[in-house]
Amino acid sequence: MISIQDISFRYDKTKVYDGFSLHIPEGQSCLISGINGVGKSTLLRLMAGVLRPDQGKIIYNPKLGPAPRKKIGFISDRLSLYESLTVAQGIELHQSAFGVDSFNDSLLKHLKIDENQRIKSLSIGQRTIYHLSLVLSARPEILLIDEIIHSIDPYLRKFFLDQLIRLLSERRMTIVTVNVNFHDIENMIDRVILLKSGRIAVDEGIDDLKDKVKRVIAVQPPEDLPILSTGGSPDRPDYYIYPFREEFRRRIDGEIIDMNLTEIVAAFIGGEYV
Amino acid sequence: MFKKELREIWKPALLRFSVVLAFPVFLEVTTARTATESGSRNLSLILMAFPVVMIWIANFLGVTAFKAEFEDRALEYWLTFPGGISRRLARKMASRITLVLLLSFSYVALCIFAGSQIPGPLNPALICPCSFLFFINGSLCGFLGNRNLRMVANVVTFFSVVVLSLGLSRFILPLFPEGNQLSAAVGSISALLIVIGIMGGTFLISARQFDLRSPELFQKRVRAFSLPLILALDIAALVFRYAGGRT
Image (cartoon, rainbow over all chains, first blue to last red; front, side, top):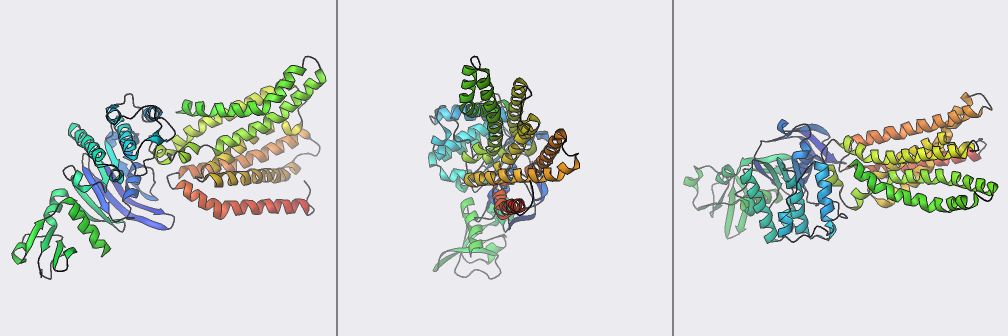
């Protein structure tokens, strides 16, 4: 559980959050999205404790004890690690910092990562998996993943997400991801949060969201439809409707299509660029 | 973590010491048996070199406190480590303070060995606080992420701290009876301790707010405020010194 209570945060003169609150219950998998620069990574960093709110507070599940950071795993988009260390030295450092006794090196072996290799010599994909191994060795209760897995190849991305899904099936864990490839994680997440100008624009369960966002292909849709954004071509326009209500089906003379998560997020974000 | 940090810093410190002190120590060892006078000269050389290297190392330990985090781009990772930020900073500083303490004890031992022929400015009661002062000065500059700015800020603040300490001691000295050497020393030490207090307080205030933004904010503050102020202070001190003020 993470409870963000009325936080304010700014980078120098740029205000990012002002009185922002969010509650993520224990065991929930949550996706945070929004346009570039809206503060998604900042929010994750605030949750991870590497940034401190100027005002307000962030409360973690009391079950995590007096040192909640021991149970928070954070994989940043910067892939911050001690690059001059070898893989083995990095493991040793992480173990001593987080008080971990054992380390499962199966992921490293699978990717043929040598323990004597310097971290800086690892590819981005290898480094991501290495970081994930480090983080998982501390058996985190809260896992925060920034959009880093966008930049790794499809095989490693699938490998990374398979590990997460396996982990979720083994134990209850709170996961917060930012802009991870939506298609890959669609079946994994419970809740979608879309940010806009430092506040929550949409906060829905994944199934509710799919029910509430529809693509309508019609030459002339009813004027009072809540159109989120438009797409398609001028001669065959698409209208993205949110919130969609069942009564609309009777009034729309056209095709109503269900959307997947990638399309839904794109429709929301597209609406902000218009 | 403390042991790990200490392991990483004691070797370079020892190497620096060895490089500077090797020659006078060699002379001391080889000549002490044959000529007492030249042996004594060599000991004086060591007594002069030791505090200089000690202050240099203390300052270096401070200024490089976050070197690994900045140069390895690991600051964000380090900030995810468990424990409050003040605890993590304290752990980081503890190993360095231990080393500065060890050096101070070594210097005191050397002075005891040398007997009573120690010139006033080399008094360990003055040199040891001095090394702590420059350690804190270095540590404040160590917050700066940009390596070049860190070095420039360190050099500038290094001299400004000297000016500040001397200026303060000029105010404190008249409080003691004239001609009393012990009182003069106490006055200088008091001035040093006040400056240590100011610098230490600044460090603690800065450390309390430390997060991923800190290096950037520090750079801005140093560029916009601290460096111009320090330079102005130095110029004022020089003008005061050469326009009729006495030292």
